[in-house]
Length: 276
Image (cartoon, rainbow, N blue to C red):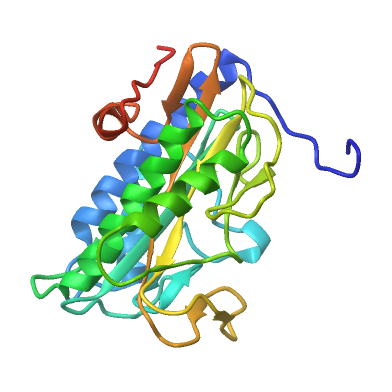
């Protein structure tokens, strides 16, 4: 602890390259799990798909057993925002599914999440919710490329959401991004909104999981009796998108995107800088 604040773990380039291995395994696991998400499939079946990819690569889950969490992914449907436990719930046409997962390779962690719109009957407002959430994530990642302080990320996410066309969307404040590295959750917190708090200075070696969570209604939430699943009080639908991003001397690198974030960051005039 320094001045009452948790110490930040700054990574070497070698550490970041190990995290990249975890990030690529995780991206593949999410690809296959998203592809399997269809009407009639249970969230437990999706968990099995994800776990199978990790096993294929001799990677470990950083979710399974974390404070006794019983699965390898969080599968949250509709008004469930985060931390949904996979089970016998059968996916239906039009569901909004959030798949959040992580991987450990050689002791280093990666964390990523995607929103999936299930089936063929998609509410246009659910599509907009997911699109804006994903865009806000990329706006936050792009801001990191030139950020002086971690708080600049939340400012960029908030500005992106506020500027989005259509009905206002709520940004959850109780659940935020985080540092990541030799453990899944580390300092610092990464807020997804303007707070007036600039946070720690951005330095090479900083690795962050940037994960905005947006809702179509009010931002108040409740944790269910399972002590994990977080739902919106007004039953409005939610979206979550997340990537793990590294800062190094040459720039930023999205460790959980196969292209390092090149395609989406180009929209913001940012070019990632791979280390490999």
